[in-house]
Length: 219
View 1 (cartoon, rainbow, N blue to C red):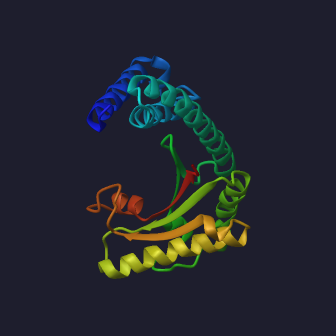
View 2: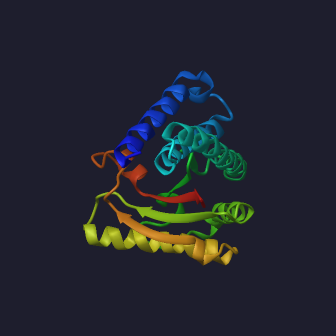
View 3: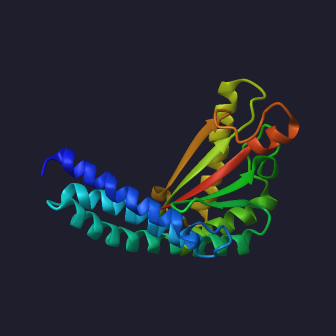
C-alpha cells in the first residue's frame, strides 16, 4: 500500500471518528459532567485512527485498532483532567478562572490581584491560592506546567514583556518553594502580545493583565 493510499485511509478514519463524535449528544452536551473525559476519548480515538492507518499495512483495520487504543488513552487523560479541575475549583473558589480544554487545564489569575502596579513581588496574602495550585500539582504529578505572564498594552512593549516574565517567574518560585519540581515547570513572558479582551477600555485591559498556569498531562 502506497503512502498516499494510507494517508487517504487515515483521513477517512479521522472523518468517521469526527462525525461519530459530533452526532453523539453525550459528546457535545456542555452540561455533561464527564464531557472532558468523552472529548478526550474522541480526540484520542481520532489520533489513534490516523496513526494506526498510516503505520498498518491494512489502513482500515489499523485505523479501527488505533482508534480503540487511542480512545482508551484519551479517556483516561480526560478523566484525570476532570478530577483535577473539580479539586482546583473546590480549593480556589471564585479567586481564579479554570478552563478545561480537554487536553489541558488553564488556571487564570488576575495580575491586579497578585501584584501591585508595576511590581513583580507577589502579595503575601495571595500566596494561599498559589499554594493551593502547588498542592494540586503535587497530587497530580504526571503533568508539565507552563506559567505564562501577560500584560495590557499600556507602556513600552519591552518593559511589558520583561514585567510579564518576572511575574511568571515569581509564581514559579512560589510553586517550587511548595515542593513542585522545577523540571516540570517553565516560566514564560508574553507581554502584551496575547490579549483576551480589548485594550481600548479599562475593563478589557484588566482582563489582559493576568497570569496563566497551564497544566498539561504527560504522554
